[in-house]
Length: 124
Image (cartoon, rainbow, N blue to C red; front, top):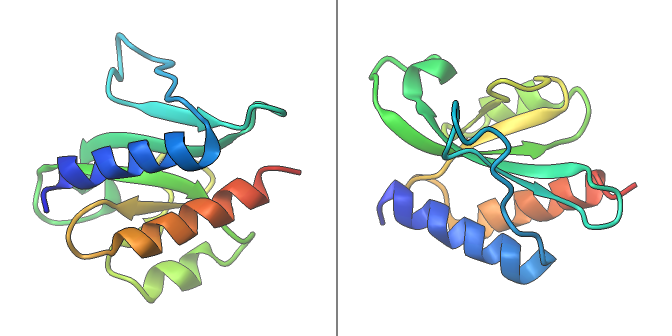
């Protein structure tokens, strides 16, 4: 499965499961960055983007699809250490958010569970 295919599956899942449509807040500078918010409180629960793998500290420089998700406060680093496809958040608070690389190395089911967790954590 390609990264783009998994990113498309994730976007469709969020739209279907949570009724959230992507918002493209920075069309000129970051046209592919899609934010997903709660309908009731407008808080973000996910950001899908294409970034450079170097932004996550990876050696190879290539475009990768990722999703940023809210995570348990101050547990992001511990969780990231247990999974090669999870990092403290790119471009967000690293104590409260994670970045998940959307590729074949992580199952859709795991990504969907992390989305659910983020949705619940931001729906207060």
